[in-house]
Amino acid sequence: MNKFNLNSLIRDNILNLDPYISARIEHNQEKNYIFLDANENSFGSPLSFFNSYNRYPDPLQKKLKKKISEFKNISSSQIFIGNGSDEIIDLVYRIFSQPGIDHAIIFPPTYGMYEVCGKIHGVDIKKIFLKEENYQLNLDEIEKNINPHSKIIFICSPNNPTGNDIKREDIEIIIKKFTGIVVLDEAYIDFSNQKSFSVEIDKYPNLIVLQTLSKSWGLAGLRIGIAITSQSIIQWMNKVKYPYNISLISQKIAIQALDNRDLFFFHLKNIIAEKEYMQKSLNQIPIIEKVYPSSANFLLAKINFSSKNLYQYLMKKKIVVRDRSKIILCNNCLRITVGTHEENEYLIDQIQKYSKIKM
Image 1: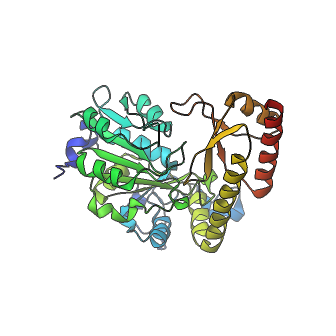
Image 2: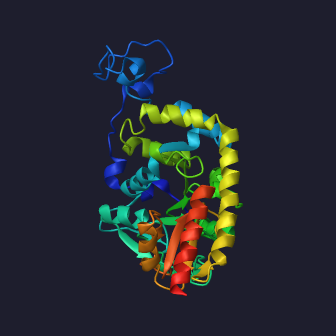
Image 3: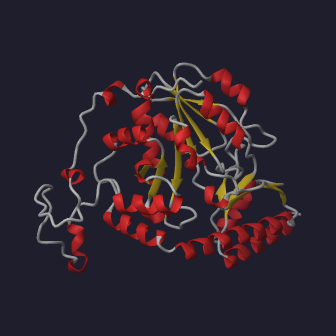
């Protein structure tokens, strides 16, 4: 049985933290209170038609959490909203890892911010590479590398930049055995056929599931990251986060988007169809050695020649993709996001022209 003890993982300075508490947490802002607590401009802003913006936003984003809970069938009390998933990753390090003592485990190739954020906090990063043949977890190596200073494990599924789902049974093994915090990043889960772990939070007290409104919901400019986890972990996140971390306008627009589910599913269907079109088209181009299976809204394509040269050629044609050739196990690979049909047609046409030059 997993002997998970939440308090034993938390930094001493966090355990003893006396957090900043906004008076707005203690009151229901729907009621007709006179707010004289936060030194706001009570006369309003110069944007008179947006007069409500002279007030600070709800620090706990209650309306937005309610909308997310309804859509995902998860209790609002198990939802934390961050300024992008990057803020949540930062909070996990700040709460659960002792700088210079503890380490986090990541599985390259994967999302770069797990490592960058760890280094910012002075936390050692232990890398256990995915299996080269299928980009899956190496469970034997993971078990060998876990020790008492292993506090956090980051798993990205579907994985970025490879696009594949990590085997569900392997993820379950890690969650059940590991006595630290497991962060499962499901930023691309809406594009996948794999079932989200978010509906099983009650089974796993050490699990934090990350999701976002940046990808499938098309709200990257709002920076709405979501953590789905136990109430105990969320209490610590609320203690450590900045008081008003999500702007009022971001909360309002996100709520409006979540009310427009038909358009969300319409766009989701189109993205998946376009991905299939791109995969089929790219596989017919001689310069493309392989297009990896993807459960995300992007494709990882391996190039027969230098991916850097193709990347630079596409830049000249005003097409921006991501050259991942410097990433472990992604030699001569480009990561290509699914665009509109017109954008994808133009991309395919330009790669075909480049291929003819090279071949």
